[in-house]
Image 1 (tube, rainbow, N blue to C red):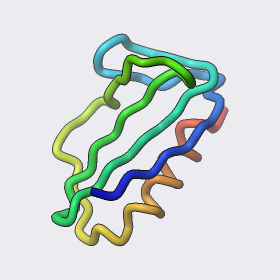
Image 2 (image 1 turned 90 degrees about the vertical axis):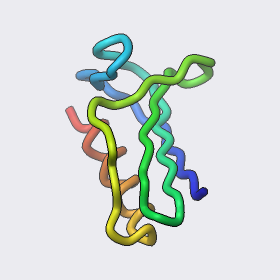
Image 3 (image 1 turned 180 degrees about the vertical axis):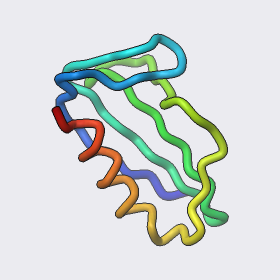
Image 4 (image 1 turned 120 degrees about the vertical axis):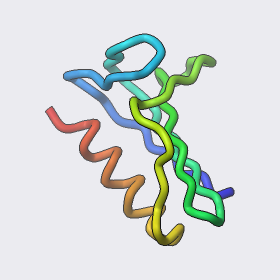
Length: 80
């Protein structure tokens, strides 16, 4: 399984399934397996609890797109 991680500051917040909106310095981790199944997790930097982004059954047609999708998500979540 391939994992990517990015740290960013969310000034307007990011919606999570478990606790609603979180903001501040966050870490996004995406994982993609060989079949293209994608998981999205987010946490406060340094925290132990991880949250999921709304939605389910994320799937990439080509697992080699994982890097691009991860960077795109981090950029979108960070924008004001």
